[in-house]
Length: 323
Image (cartoon, rainbow, N blue to C red; front, top):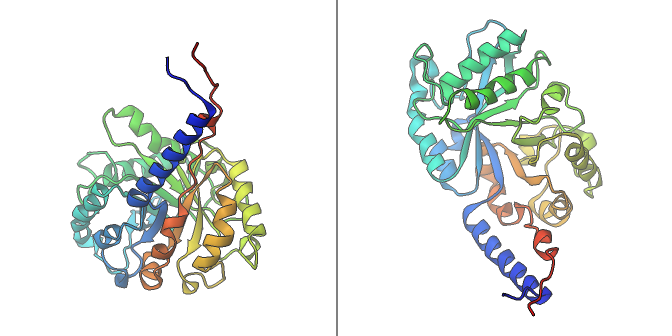
């Protein structure tokens, strides 16, 4: 019988930590980014090829619900009105082949809202068949045949109701249609808790990732120290069921006119060491690819962002001796 001593367990833990750190550095950044709002940000495929991102939110579907015909705006990258954005299908697939999750962001600045349960159901059907695993020929696919990994709720206007139902309808498609790709859901609430528009939705356990916006909200900003920011982050972690919470940041001062930019050195030395104490801390989300391309923010911080791997379960295993 093998002997499991405290010393051997500790050695095993350190070896696993070293191995995990090496694999993490090669294959995971724990960074997300919004892409699609500036033609000077470069292509989607080029963004993914940097190796700096694990998640890319395509922004955005700015019009939906309330009887409106949905519209996507990619700020000059392509024109969906003449099917010009279907060419992005190959770029989306290229990103996914690199292990990057590609989501469609809905909301932002635009005209949208959900007027009823039936409206939420109709929008869910549109999203499922137009961007996700559905195949109903009555719907066009603005981004081509590529199947996105999920939907990001970046709601900052319009009505506050029925987003919990929209999330439930989207998740239900995986149960109804066996063999389809898992639908991931994310949300980008403002950091003051609770978020005005998504409070009800975020009380559900339907969201896989929540990137809280710690910018343009002075009460949550980093200022000389990380106390306010950490308190706000911990409030989110303690108050919603989602297990993966990201620190949403501007990639440059110009990306957040009302403040919230954290210099890379301060993020690495003062903020991340505190946030990594939270079991729910999962990384950072940057607004946006254009500013990150100019500033190089993700390149400067990516080796420090991922949460620390915990080996408490290994170290707490009962010690057995052989006789």
